[in-house]
Structures are given as structure tokens and as C-alpha cells.
Length: 180
Image (cartoon, rainbow, N blue to C red; front, side, top):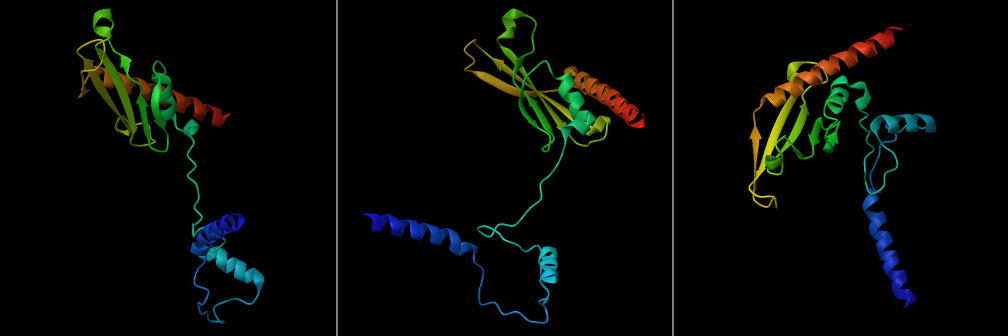
């Protein structure tokens, strides 16, 4: 029984190790390979060579920080009255959860809104963000039979204007802090 487990584990380890091996019979020209170890290391770094597991390449990360983008911060502040289902800074999108857009209690259970903010630019400009509003209208309180439509409303323009104003104020404050 132990031999069976030993063979299975040996097979598993060999399957992990073998794909990472490159052609060991590759011929190299001695004139192309530096003799000094430090020069070889420098050449390998320049060519992107190094130890890799399962043939993976080393990749650098993307370091985007939302705290430095005034449009992002302003959007979070303006839409703080509703929870978010997706807030992806690197993807440039904010999506709110469905929320009631009515004040009338009878219609409250029938109509919900969802706001999507797409960031087209990091600059504070009117075409730097896009506001999309979806409306979900349900026929009954069980919310089984609903229709979802993209709507054009003045709410979108109001939210966009509020975000741009808040972003301009945040930028002005940050510039004031850096000057002092």
C-alpha cells in the first residue's frame, strides 16, 4: 500500500517539475555567454531570465491608488447614500446596488434604480465620467416579474454635476496642501 502512494506522489512531483524544464541540450556560443558571473547575472536580468515555476514569467503589478484621483473620491462621496456592488478603481467603474427611487410608499416596492459611473479619464472634465441609470420596475411585491431598462433622466446630469463640483473642490484642497 505504501509503494502505491510513493509511486503516485513520485508521478505527481514529476508532472509538476518536468514542464518547467527547458531544453537542456540547447547549444550556446561561448562568445555570447559572459565568463564573469556578475556580467552573466546582469545579462540575464536584462533578458528577463530567472527562476520560474511552471514556466511563469515575472510580471510587475499595477499600482493605482484611488486616494490620489479626485473624480474617484468625489464619486464615492456623492453616492455615499447607497451601497456599492462593484467598486473597481483599476477597471474605472462604480456600480451601486439597487435602491428605491420613489418617495411614494405604494410605488416604492415597484421601482428601483441602479447607478453606474464609468471613468473615461482621470482629468476633471464633463466627458471624463459617464453616468448610466437603470430602472427596475416590478409588477408585484414579490419582485418576480420585473423589467430592467436603461433610462435617461435629469438625475444622471445632477449626479454628474455634483461629482464634478466635488472633484474640483478636492483638487483645489490638495493643491493648497501641496503648496503649504
